[in-house]
Image (cartoon, one colour):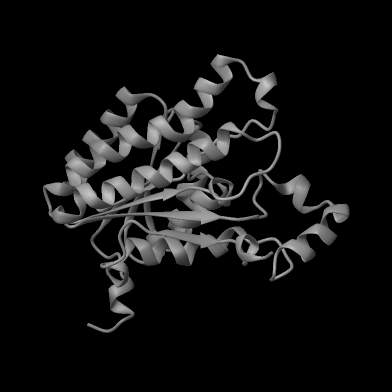
Length: 256
């Protein structure tokens, strides 16, 4: 087996949440191109169908599961469908993330609870149940998309980094608990990516001096630049990488 062979996902099944667009779609597309069948999730069936069609047009295999990630009954139903149809789950990428940029003093308890439920609690339960399915085959890759917001702070953004830092703790704990079962658990912390969600900021010329000063590569990341990190952690090439946070930020968090 060559080193390139170790990146193959042929014969494997992956589940990527929030994969209709943005980073989730690029990750799903990369896994499919490497040979996996990818189940893409999101709340809107029509946009998921578009994502599946794009992956299929590139020669990949994918299917859609539309549900709210915070709905635990829907999580369990989706995993049951994967087991019934494919008999296995090899890769889980928890990518869904919501954000509410407001001072904490402006956020009531319901707003805080909703963000934590979407950004952290949903990933905890889905990872737990996915790991139980992976254990049966003695192999699995759990990957959480966190954020550099879990390492550095900005004003008026308190709950999102708290949830993302929680995901880092989850992956490290699961690395210890599930490592003996052939399951690795890692996180990817993206920096400033020019996704649809950040389109207005990425197009703001007034922000570019800050980008050039703060990010050593002096630009926003393209959405597809997350794909290599995800494919690596999902592959046999990363078989001894466990409990790690792979930062993909152009050097932003290491610059003084």
